[in-house]
Structures are given as C-alpha cells and as structure tokens.
Length: 87
Image (tube, rainbow, N blue to C red; front, side, top):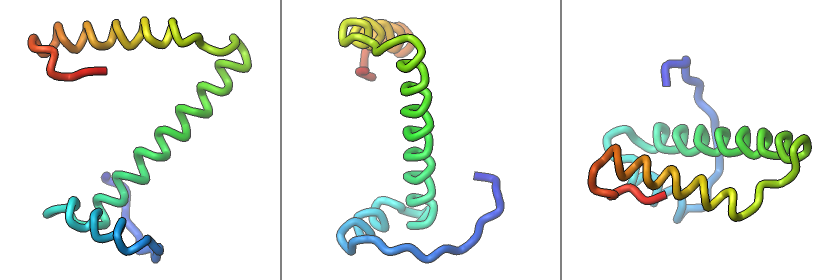
C-alpha cells in the first residue's frame, strides 16, 4: 500500500487481535489488519457488482457457477502443471 497512512483507534476482541498479531509477523498487526480490511472492501465491491448484474440479467444458476469453477480449475491446472491450486 503506497497511500499515506494515518493512525486510527479500533477495538477488537482480544483473541482476534492476538491471532492477528501472531500472524502479522514482521509486517506487524497494522499491515495485517489493513490487508484484511482491503480484502473485505474488495468483497463488498464485488457483491455490489453482482447485485447490479443480477438485477439487470437475473441470477446466475448453480450450474453456471460450477461450470465457471471447473474452467478456473482447469486453467490453474494447466498453468501450474500439477493442479495444486483448487477453485
């Protein structure tokens, strides 16, 4: 993240904060939390896009979702050559 940083005060349950601190490693708790928040924002944005698309085109069926997962899995298998990354 290349944006300027600013200090904020947040409250977290102790067990979550300690687990995040342990996983933060050399980057630290702040970097770990920032990455988690960034992922959540990406998910929220994606969910908004899905809602707009479904409102315009209707919901995607489970069969369509599974077909796309299968395509992704096949592409990853070809890319890695071992199938180590599952969809």
